[in-house]
Every structure is written in C-alpha cells, then in structure tokens.
Image 1 (cartoon, rainbow, N blue to C red):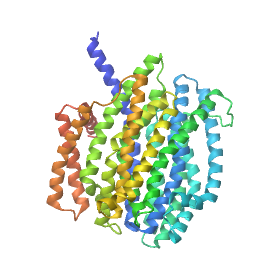
Image 2: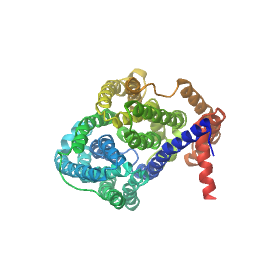
Image 3: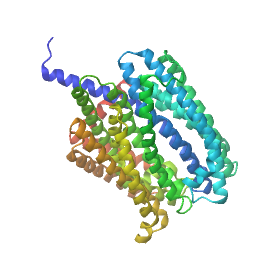
Image 4: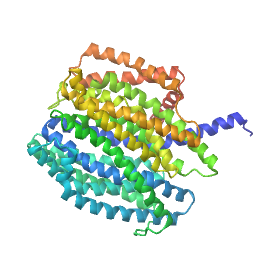
Length: 540
C-alpha cells in the first residue's frame, strides 16, 4: 500500500515527536520522583527547623558539596563525556566506548579523592568565603556540617558518571530517579530524630544521613550499568584520542559550570549579610523554583544531548537535525515553564504554603518565600531555554562558547545582586529581608542576557531557531486567564488552611491553562491531553 507524501511526512513527524518526547518524559518522570521526595524532605526540615540559625547553617553547608558535585559531576560529564561516549555507541564501537568510560571513572575517582581530603581540611576557609556573614556558633556549626558531608561528594560525583553512561544508552528513568534514595535516608533521619534532639544535633544527624544516602544512590545504579556496559575497562590511560577529547572538553565545561555555580553562591554570600533566616528562605525558594527547571528544562536538555550528539551526515544535515530538535524542545519548554512562572508570581503563597507552612514555619515565612519565588519568575523561562541551547553547543563539541556567556552572566549577577540585596530595599523603604527577592530577580535579568547571547550565536551557526514572540505572548495570556479562577478560590477560602486551598486552587489553575491553550490550538496541549488519555486507557 502506497502512502502519499504528505501522509508519510506527517507520520514521520509524529514518530520524531514521540521519540523526542519519550526520552524527555522518562527524564522528567525520574526528576519528578526525586524532586517530590526532595520536597517531602524539605517540608519535614522546615517543620522541625523553620528559619532558625541551624537551618541557615545546614542550607549553607549543603551548598558547598553540591557546588563541587555540579562542578565534577552531572553537568560537566553531560557536556564532556556524553557527546564522545554516545557518538562511539552510535558508531558501534563498544570496545572503545568501554575504554573511555573506564578511563573517565579512574580520572574522576582520583580527582574526588584528593578533593574530599583537601575540602575537609580547607572547610573553615570555604565558609569564610561563601558565608562571611556567619559568626560564632553559627559559623562553627556550618564548618562541622560541611566536613561531615564532604565524603558524600565523591559518591555523588561517581553517581553522575553512572548517569552519563545510562543516559547514553537511553536509560533515563533510573539515573534521574536515583536521588530518591539519597532523600529517603535523610527523611528517615528527620522522622527518627526530629523534635527529639536540639536543632544543632538534628542537622548534624541529617548530614550523616546525607552521606549514607549518597552511597545508596550510587549503589542502585550499578547493576544496570554493568548490564549495559559489558566492555568497561578501568584504567588511567589518558593517551587515547577519545579520552583526550573528553579531558579537553572537561576543562572549559568545568570552568563554565563553576561560573554558573558561582552565580548561585553570590546570592548566598549576599544573603548571609541580611537578616537571620535569609539564607534558609533563599534555599527553600530555590528548591521550588528548580522543580519546573528540572522537570522540563533539564529533562528536555538531558534527553536531547545524546540525541543531538549522535547526529551524523554532512555538516548541513547535522545542523538541520540540531535546529529541528532545538525548535521542538524550545516550544515544549515554553509551554510548561510560562505557567510555572505565572504560578510563582500570582499564586506563590499557595505553592509555598502547601510545601512549607506548619510547625516552626509560619505564614510570615510563606509570604517571604513567595516574594523570593516571584523574583525567580523573572528569569525562569530564559534560564530553562538557555540550558537547551548549551546542550546544543556541547553536542557540537563546543564547550567554550557557553563558558564565555556564563562569565558575562555571573559578572552582571554580582553587580545587580549587590545593589538589589543591600541597597534597593533601603531606597524603596521596605524591610531588608526583601533583599532576597531582589537577588533572584537580578539573577533572572542576567539570565536573559545569557540566553540572548546563546541564541544569537547559535542562530549564526546553524540558522534561525527559537519560539516566535507571538507564541510566547499567547502562552502568558493563557496563564494569566487560568490564574483568575484560582485567585477566586483563594479569596473565597482564605489562607488559613494552605493544604486545602492548594488542593483546589492549583489543579484548577493547571486544568484551566490546558483548556485555554487547547482552545487556542497549541500543539503541546493536544499532545499532553493525548498522552494523559493513553495512560488512563492503559490503567483501566
């Protein structure tokens, strides 16, 4: 039976969309599970610790291992290791792929061993650099927490190596769901000891649990890794061509990720000079703002990186494939991120209330987090789409271009954040604590500049990409219309019971957004509805 050209093209396009969304759905599902469990951990943490000095100390302490994990772990490996390893798999050279994977493991193991030893010894200097506003008992507690958590850094970096291998084999779910194990161990510690020991001892016990959880996170990935990578050869051979390529790419990505991480530490550094609880509230808000970035931005960027890295053919064919995947990925990101930003701006107190309010965390803290979330909404779309553009550069073995633009972003973040956090509240005549919201808003402004630079340079290389401005405006209008019934519920019910309010208002907002975008003919809304219908049919 012959298929007409238009029908054949339509089927091919549908198959491509299914292929693209399939990987993103698996990544998103894994991230969703880990983030939800992480929010449960955060909810318990705020219940027992609120905005206390111990909460500030733990939040600051956890950032230092996370900083190093991101430097040596998932982000750097995704940019330097996956493009090389995935291309070798696509070419059928499993022997060389196994040698590259083994060499990268050996290099990482050596680096993290030295890093942990030096890190434990240098912790007091790190605290003075990253939280100079901490003094006396608060500073000493932060130092002890960092020293306890440092061994977990090495385990999490090796876990990221597992993620790189599993992703290249398109096994996304396990690698991104494995942090569930890390969070569950800490949840266990909070449930066992919360309210039974003083707060300083409680955060110390949670720090110990974080190391045990990191070991479990690594362990759950190893069986699948050994099943997929049967040619693994562990060695320190750095002379092989492909290993040298990974190492060469590693250096600029290392500095690029470092620059991006420094942007987050600039916020924490400035927040440490503000009122007590500012560092903790910044951390609470970032936990929430990272949820849509992780679910949609990271999910799409992570699933597209090995696919774009595997593109073969002439330079024009490769450019065409990357351009197509970029455009489809950017449209999906905009569809999900714009309503997330609108929710932070308009319904942020409902979101923060259902997640954190209770115990030591009061309504006042909820409103504080709302303000910081509203600041995060400024750059949410730019930061998320920027991740996909960076992945497109990494897929083309170019790690220097994202580094250059990240440095510009951090410089602007430092200048704007300093003014917004320490001076703007005074000029506006508002409480100093709102300087934290200024931090996240200024970072968002800098994120838009980085996104513009990434898109402009990519367009010059492979052709015009991006989401039409009319589509972006329409999605914002749909989100604003969808928020109206949720606001009506809020004013009718009040804010005394955040859980009941959220159970009605947030689903109403989501359903209204899907209805409005479906009526407007947005393809992503139709695809989402079809996917939900398929899941429902299978379940029944």
